[in-house]
Length: 301
Image (tube, rainbow, N blue to C red; front, side):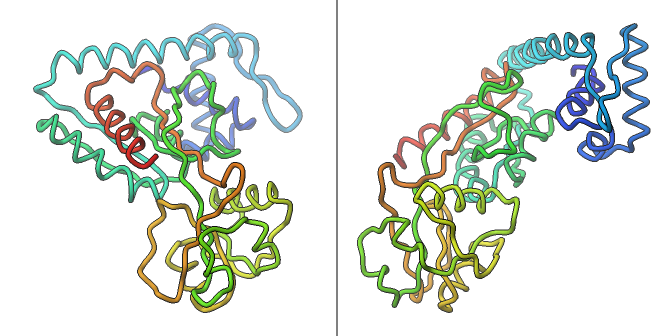
């Protein structure tokens, strides 16, 4: 494992303060400060300098982090090479993903890997997209299935390998007796005058809805907030508003609710990606999980 203090330094760089980095890692600010002072002494150069209420990296710290990305990638390549030559000892593979992925995509990947690697252990952790990347960096997860949001690393972030997996179409959820329920498909703007049921502020789902509505040319009137698909569907069935739900989102059977496919050019969809630490793709169990997910994505296309 690469020196954990370098990972902490990276977090300070991204979040701008020692306090924010400490919160992200579950440390106290004094513990983070102590780690970075020790790293600075070992390196022989200062790593941080004041920048108003925040801190910024020195040139030495920037060079260190650039080199650390290459070291991390090489470390992952070595781990993959060892795993490929010691298959009988199995190992642990941890998959993480947002709720829909954890329910609809990851169980099949677990079964596929377990079939090919009977000596290995595979586990699933449900987490939101931003948390998934934190789990990857902390080596508490090896593969993430995520929806890209404003809070996730950019696609060209050198610490990760991110690949498109599938587009998950979006459906409009309406009461079964609603006029739109009688159509084979609708445009999002057809529901522009409806009351809407959205997730809470800051959630990826709320961001998805607001972005899709903005692209369609309107701002939804938010009547209720719901964090769970089941709750949102119950509110729709009671006639309290409409919602949108991804095709992969599983809902309880309810004849009072109708899912109507959304049309458009292009039709609204969630773009689902896989993310791994750079250099780890050839790890055998990880490679098997990725292969299963790609096959599943082709079947759903």
